[in-house]
Image (cartoon, rainbow, N blue to C red; front, top):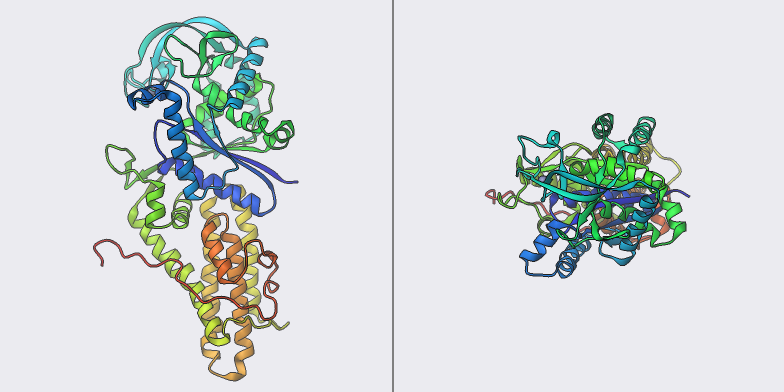
Length: 512
Ligand SMILES: [Zn+2]
């Protein structure tokens, strides 16, 4: 059986859900829904990353103990994702007991095999990033992310022999060109691996930080957050049992933003090699969103919250916009004007009007009762059928290649064609002559079949809209008629519902 395991990064609980991580959710959720709908065994994981300096500090400034603080923020993430309707199968927290014990198991195993060693180290440490920097990585002596000068600290710590696995990983990526995609990010990782890779400091002394997972071989230390968090992708499966791990792990696809390519493209696979675990299948890297051409930031007040989107424009319209407006892997710009423009043009005028128009004719001419199809189809009928059948396979191909925008282009081209079919066949003219009633019934049958196919094809992208279409066609969720081939969805006497406005037009502010 076909299987897929889809993960998002664990969101760091020192911030709240925003456009960037909501985008990761939309991408991964769309793919998970696509695979589930086509019958693949699917496991979809998300969760929160809860250990480390930054969390300890954020908890302290909120006047809370770290655990109480992370309980609160983790619950916020979960509540927001649930309200957005994301269909994850499990929500992992790095403070969950099963995760902590599995991380300790991996640490113990790698330590036993000699790939973790103890050493004195002095270096430049960024507290924001919770890691040491080499001179070469700094920009004008500052952390490129935090734009602050790192502090020179000297410590005795444990190190992971990452360098030992450098060549093995390099070869794997060279022989598996789709391991990291799109290609630009693969090349980024290859460039890192063609330079000497330093061993990774994986411990933090408790004298400096206690909020972490204790090293099983030295109680004076906790482990580095990445060595903790990355392991969630495996611990979440191990929790379900060895057979689920065997089943899903080889099909793992990680979705991440481009800021965390190094931990996922270098740290994580070398950790897997050291732990004697197979490598994941794909690392899927998406770009950043700017808002109105500017970097998103709280101080600029230009953040986009998923719930604001849900309440103003609807979750499906938001999903449509981010999937249609971005090219996977590249940066994109979020403009409210384009959001409203696409909403009005693609959703209100095209999709919404088309469905209303078909249902209105069906109601007016036949009191909603679907008329039989004859065996004699004209070219236009066959062409409409072919467009939808071809769309189905093309959408599948685009989605497996993460070309979400192309999949939606194909779907909207089918909508355009459906509008042309109405013009070509002009049921509204034919109906004036009673001799044509049977043909008008057939034309509308084909058009209702198009809505039925639309409901099926829209499901991964716009799940609520797909449901609305199903109920307008008077089908319950899961009705086999929804999956039937062209011309076979409607039994004799089936009655569809009256139209309703799916996407009320939005007037641009100042235009009212
Ligand atoms: Zn930093």
